[in-house]
Amino acid sequence: MNDIPFRVVELENLVSNHSKEEASSNALLKDKELQVSSLMKELDGLKDILSKKDEVISQLHSLFSLIYERGLGKKIDSEPHDRDSLEKAMSQIMQSIASKEDAYEKLQNDNKAIHKEILLCQKELEAEKSKVTDLEELRIKEKTGADEKIATLTRKLSSEEKEHAEKMQALRDELTAECEALKDKITAMEEAGEKQVEDRLLLLETRYQLELSDREKVFEKEKEDWNRKSRGLEVALAAKDEEKVWFIFLVISRVMY
Image (cartoon, rainbow, N blue to C red; front, top):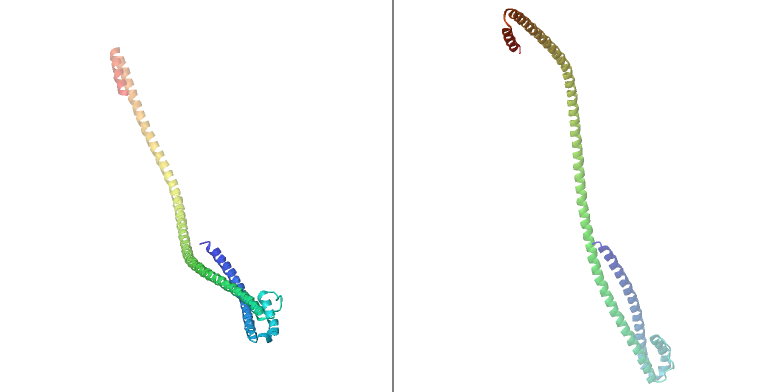
């Protein structure tokens, strides 16, 4: 596909060159046609002069010399004085004319071949131009479709960005409000917590005092019991023998522990 523009330019150059060659050939053909036409006219005039035979030989010579010079490109070496010489010269002129006609026919054939090749190149060029046109139309169509898609996506993206920004702002506002409420709640909890701590400390202190008082009472009671048992032991020691004393001591020890 990328070689098509290069091929189109190449074909256009080829057509231009063939057109120039055709124009040159046409100009040459036209010039030859004029020469042949002029020679034919002069030959016709020569034939008319020959019909008058000898009385016009002198007049014919000048004209014949001109024809001969134009036909062969050179002058007559000698002046024809009789009909045979004149006919021989005319034969040479006719041969020259026939040769020029052959060259003219060949030139026409070459021109036809060139013209045919030009037509083929023009057809190929038109086909390539048609392909280029189709490709350009397809490219424009695809570009238009892509531009429309881009525009649609751009509008959609802009709308989504706006919607997202609004949602984010609403979320920020909501979070800000929640943060403020949480701060207030934390402050209230801290204030309430300080009061609770104070109350708990006071309660613990009261419980400690009560437990301490209870322990002191128990200790005093145990102390009294021990003193009482000690006094009983002293009495038993005084009244019993050593074996009974030890038995009582063991019993007291078990009771104590």
